[in-house]
Length: 160
Image (cartoon, rainbow, N blue to C red; front, side, top):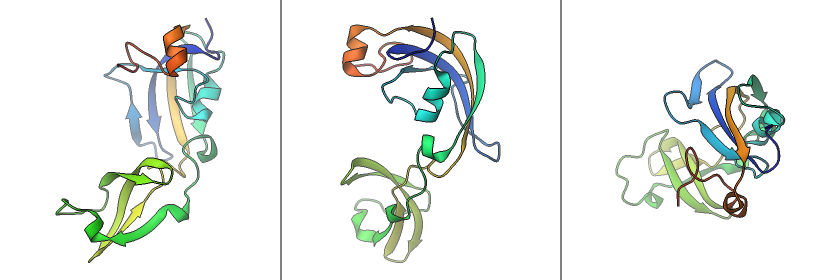
C-alpha cells in the first residue's frame, strides 16, 4: 500500500539542521505515526512521502516555508519580568506555554535584562531548513475513528 490521503504511515526518522546537528530522532523509540493529509506533520515532509511504500528510505530537505515558517520579527517581544509569576530564576532558553491571540503557544526566553524579558513566539525551528532521513516502516488504511478524530490511534499515535 502506498502513502496517500487518509492512510496511516509509520516512519523512522532523524531530523538534522544545516550544521548536521541531530534535532530529533525516533531511533531507540517508536516510529512516528501520522494520518496522511490531515496536517499531522509539516507540509514539506508530508508531500515528500506521497506514494512511498514500506521499506522506502529517503532524504528530504524542507525549506522554512514548508516547515515551521520564516522567522517573524513581530513575535519577538519585551515584557515585564513580573509576568513570570512563580518563576524565580528566568534564564535564556527557557520555554513556557502562553495564551496568545492564536491560542496556546510555546514562547522561548531570548534575553533577560533586569526587570525586562525578551521572549520569542516563533516556533523553535522557524527559519531553519530541516533535513530528514526517513524510512517508511508501515502503511495502512485509517480507521473510521481515526479519520473522524484527524489523528492516529494506537502504537505510535494518540491515546485517549
